[in-house]
Image (tube, rainbow, N blue to C red; front, side, top):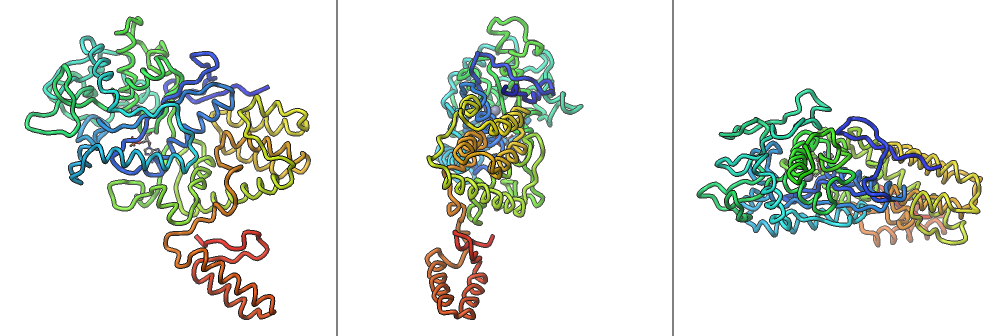
Length: 499
Ligand code: AMP
Ligand code: ZN
């Protein structure tokens, strides 16, 4: 009855029916943030996507093991193997300890994860915890797949079949911008271990057979994913930019590792050789005025949205309204519309809960939701359509409309509807059962009033109305409007911040 889960595999560039490597399980690795600065909301789109993927796998009944890494070393200012380490640079610019910087921005990222109702993965793997394992991995592939240059150990991309297929599947070029390094055999060769240049000091460095230095960014993800999930695992995720350089390089390392570990040749026709069977990429969140760039002053952090009075889950809903493979344009109007939609959803769920006799228990997934018997038969088509939508490469936009139709239908008893809504929200993660309408009323940072001022003015207005003094009552309403507060007569909430 339940629809087969179909996911778009960037490696084969087609929709494929999900077949787990280990029966009943799903093992997923998501490239995590580089913690040299706050994440912008575009970065967070990548984790909302990975979260919806994980929740959908749970809905489908798979036991999920999700890993997200924290990159605290090795990511250069240019993905294509050029520039400086982002963390070393941030530490030098701010004259701070690199470890403090990593700690601070890791915590800031985790705060955004929580605010967006992104489920905790089974492991947060911190790159610097895995340096000995990285050296081991590099040692295993060094002889056959690498060459040692002055700068460190470089991966020879001609040593594996089909290098760059992931990128080439989507563009005609397939090779990113390349730094000229003397002695590289191929332009796309990349460092898997960077020696600290003579005369330079780095805050993060380790001894290795190729000199004191630091691991390359691509190496980290190969090592952490392989170690925590085992090659081959099921799904590897990241933003679409990773399809061009980072993931082709991870795949090349994984091919080298698989064949060095005695698993035959390293061809990509054996899906396991790429490390993961399915590679999935979310498209970008874009913004016209350049506010997504971390290099230019104020940028679009989740906290900026909150400071302006938007609940973070409105941003999550905004992401879910688009397909993850479509580019999504950010605008404040779009965010406002998502907030309005979220308010309606929350109010509809509250109204339903008030009419149901018992609170909904969060469901586990399709199997449990479909087993709500004696649920009215009418429930099934809703659950089936919702299931078909998410099973169709995570079509959350359609899933949301099914949820709204279910909330609006009168034909099904509230109790049954509430249970189904809870099951659907276990996939969407909008917190519909836990947040109330008042939680969505966030005070903008620049508001001149506080909540007590507003309540006090509304008390005065109530008294004026009771005394049929409508001139005073209107004046109070206008005064509040001038200070950014909208009075909503007839709405149980009473008032709202104007955004
Ligand atoms: P980083 O911290 O730069 O390694 O990026 C973290 C994640 O965000 C990666 O998966 C990137 O591919 C992804 N990403 C970067 N920019 C955007 C964007 N504008 N929209 C969506 N995802 C992005
Ligand atoms: Zn990665």
